[in-house]
Length: 92
Image (cartoon, one colour):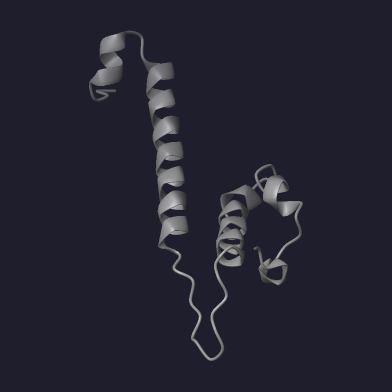
């Protein structure tokens, strides 16, 4: 069961944050953190409560890394005149 009181933003941000310039760099991560925290089990009475965030951080790190790699590879592909130039380092 989700804890609706554990979300910081409205439901529109879950989709809209991907399309707003500059905000799309940070808000999807915040929405994922909120969703992760809202979907975890609540602690018992008197128990300290800390949600482990490493799965969300791993996901976001991989997402950013693949996005940057795709941009790099796409740029190399666009600038190459031959297939061999894509595989070898730029000498320009």
